[in-house]
Image 1 (cartoon, rainbow, N blue to C red):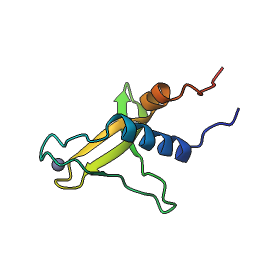
Image 2: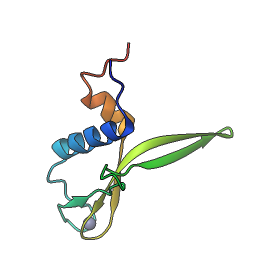
Image 3: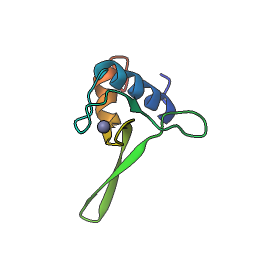
Image 4: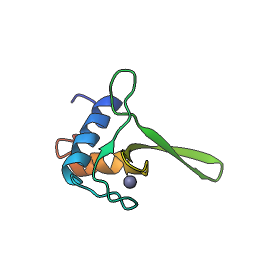
Length: 92
Ligand SMILES: [Zn+2]
């Protein structure tokens, strides 16, 4: 019944991506450690990817993770993660 807040979704996404992609290797420098940004409240910082179609803009929330060695940044789609990780996702 409780609706997840965006910070709940960000934390869930960070845990899910960490579990599914642990030991992921950076494709550019072969480093295996990744960092996430934090808001002033310490919540994983999200990025918003904007898509424009017929003068309508849609923004999708993404979880960015940055290689600690070369700065390459990868983005994980929160909507996709939420649908993959949320068996307790009760939206009826
Ligand atoms: Zn790297």
